[in-house]
Length: 87
Image (tube, rainbow, N blue to C red; front, side, top):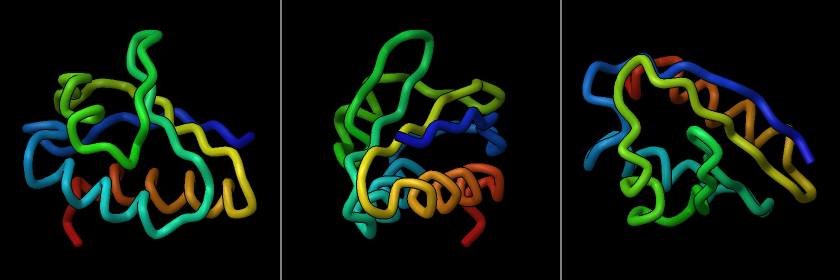
């Protein structure tokens, strides 16, 4: 299991479009991936799950992965969040 904390950089947080980019990126990996905010954990590959966390800009979240490519998955998603979803 690999875990990393990250601060959401874009102003609107993980809503609609940024959340879609996040989920698409998460689905590129084989590992099971979760996003955690304030003790609530959801599947990072689920749009409804991620949106249900109500993640806003400036919030700190944990990205957790478990599997063959767990470190690569977490680092890839952290990079995406830190970029403000400017892909």
